Length: 113
Length: 116
Image (cartoon, rainbow over all chains, first blue to last red; front, side, top):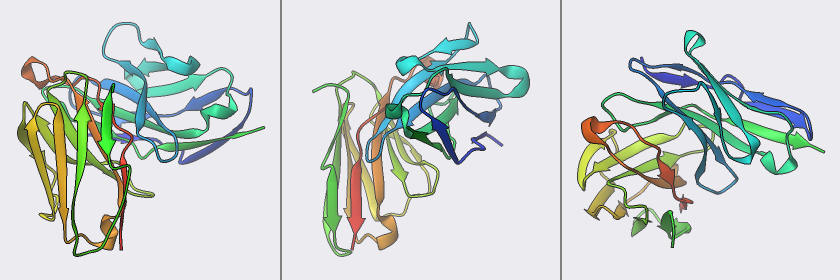
């Protein structure tokens, strides 16, 4: 079955601390992977995406993610979190002969001063 | 206007009302999507339109009726909704490539719907 798992529903970090949000996927074709961020009451904004090539991808707002095929993972990282990073983060997978995306259930990030 | 816009941003309606949600994309894409986002639930894909043709209806109740008159506009017509239909409705668009290959979906800000 095709699925995306974000095992952490809620994470709290201190401002300035590093962050890693986990994402694992199960997908039958070569995966295209995405991270989106959603602020309260807003739509989803693309942070970064992986289609092919270098497995470490850089995104906006200082975020990066690493694709690890052997672990079926695409974890999101940021070396130093800012208070404005508090939001909900969604991992998604697509690929193959379909333009549908499968989303994870999201991780809600809180940032302590 | 740039990106994907949605109107209205907020909508309150009674169970007997008929209303419509509008989505417009200014990105030159050829695929558009409706999603439902409820509290504490995963994002649910409702409908997919590729080149103005509906290619996906994810077992959505008939009280939701989509319409895609052209590649830039997408509507969701609502009638006799239930309180459990209250949610954030998100529209997205993307480019569909030869063979249907996935590309990035760009989302609008959503319409917050409350059904009384």
